[in-house]
Image (cartoon, rainbow, N blue to C red):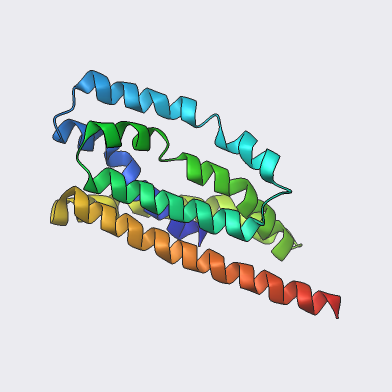
Amino acid sequence: CMSVLCMAHSMIFPFVERMGIARGYAPALVAAVLVSIGFANLVPSPLAAVLEKRLKPERAIVGGTLLHVALALLVTQVPRFGVYAPLVAVLTTPLLFVHPFLFGLIARLDPSGRAVAATPAVLMVGSAIGPALGGALLMASSYPGLGFGVAAGGLVAALCFYLMGGYQADREAEDRR
């Protein structure tokens, strides 16, 4: 699940700068959007910490994944700077919001700690595959096709996370017996 989510994100993120330039936006404006990503990324992790006890991890994870899918589709399908700039600025924030919930859920599902220890490798596998897959999609079907590819990967990840939540519920019911 995590590998697919990272793959979906890394399919689009390397191309947001090229997308802006290809659509004719001024290089200085595209650069400003890229700088804004750093500021937007200051928000999701503290927000996740504040909401940790208020949100169910499964809902936060699936919701963040679906939000990422929506952002990727809008960025790739709507060629207007007024859409591109704010959505690219927050494109990574759903993933940064999801990660604390995801690590906590994995730690609860596997008390041995092995799954959490393997998580960086799992994330890197998806992140390594994504740019090549995204580039192939981009060459074959332009930016709209890339958006649909990212959406497909994100939906698969969301489905996996949803099913993982059901597994946790079954496990908790079994532990109560």
